[in-house]
Image (cartoon, rainbow, N blue to C red; front, side):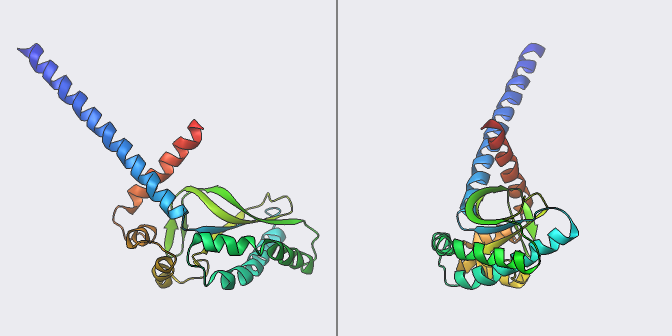
Length: 209
């Protein structure tokens, strides 16, 4: 009798373990889908300083401001990420020239490159919103050796300078669904779990590649 009870208990545990595994895999698939849907709507700005010196970090911020002064008005009328990408690609030489001018105006001779490329980002918290880890299209400005602390934000939708209260409206205008807006602004009660799941599965993907 005890043997049968023990066997029955083991089967229940096996079933429970299989159900947990199935739920975990399903949650991973949903988390990755959520992260991909978000990354397909966003263009991030990534400015890398030459070094961590106080002077190079200050220069990084000036180059950032110069790029934003051109990019944000340019993207005001963009309906979605595809249009934003096309607009930026058409102005990359100009953006690079402006970054180089800013560097020279501040007394440095660092080279600088400004490109659009897919870049892997960790989960990042900004004022008023958070984006989960993943691969995002990024407008990247690399100053000199590009070995210093870098600066990240979102150039499309135009969230770099947006106040917290303006983030939902800007995201909706860029094609985010209400659920996605709730996720990035943490209004979704499952935000923390979903964000951690995205980060976990992105890390696992990178490990297996």
